[in-house]
Length: 429
Ligand SMILES: [Cu+2]
Image (cartoon, rainbow, N blue to C red; front, side, top):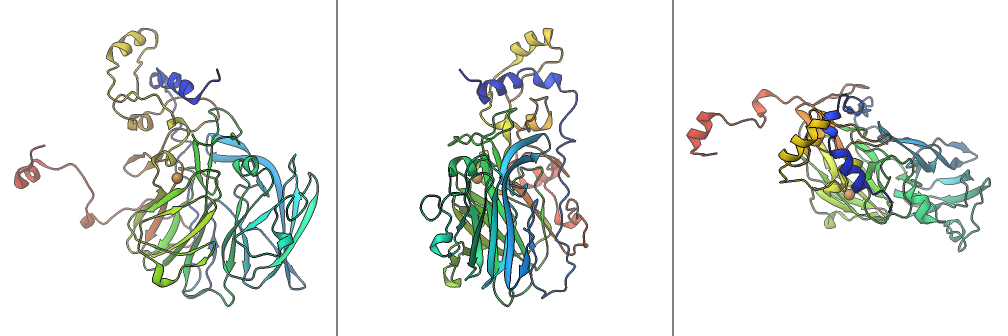
């Protein structure tokens, strides 16, 4: 029998709390966001922001924009505590965003540094047949060590993606994917906060450094742009800004209902094109099926740190929370008393729900991340995985992390009801 996450986690839970002398909390403290500083006057062209990621550098030669992608393996940190051997492009997963302008003629060199053949398919882009990147069908695969050349014109603006079309199951599972953003010719309309996010899911056995390419479920590493909360960069906006988030999903199996707090948005485009305004409906959650892009837009309406996350609860937590033994409702007193004779201070966790696991950190296997856990202004944030925050402020300062939102006192914050509140409103707790 192989050691499952369930058995490992079970043995970790038992007695673990008592042994926790040093928490991981400090190491997984919320990563400093990289604000898209408002350093341009209103009305200037939008600048694409890739949280935790980058745009692929390119050069223009004789009217042709030239890119170079390297398919390769590298070490990739999902969040502090978990580093994996990922496959991706130019040292990142997802690979860097290919950014271009509608009508641009591009030449993309692809060097294969993987141990097996690959190709790149330009998902959603209308390319000449021979450039479609399907090994065996439209081209020969790119063998290890080889460099191939793709050349075409981006004939329409939009948000698209790229991924291999050889051994897709392995290569995509290990992280090979990227986004393509083609801006409309003549620039965009009004100033927009323009963000690119790709979801992904992996099954990384606890303590292992490689995702399981064969996994069909039980994904335990859920990411936005390759990072799990609390390592996900925040998105930022000023009140009144139009915010666009291009959400792409090239994960292997799951569709992600991505939910935003504090705002309603519309899906304005997919990788198929623009959604006609008459067909748009207000939403607070958008399902992003695998193999699609959903571009959402909204006006930042209220200051705050508004969560943006997958609404599948198992997609908003990290490795250690998956397949934990269910102890909710169990009475561990007798067990605790016996075990504390050999493990002083021993206490079974999970009997009152899972929140205590994020509050009372426990030691865990090397190269693994806790179930949940960002530190927020009011304690532990019981979220992990596919979770980030949209920080909306009246004003942002160029290059400065806006920190946690502090509401005006007159806005009110949920707090314990006073005796006079209860009495006055006739509430009996
Ligand atoms: Cu999800």
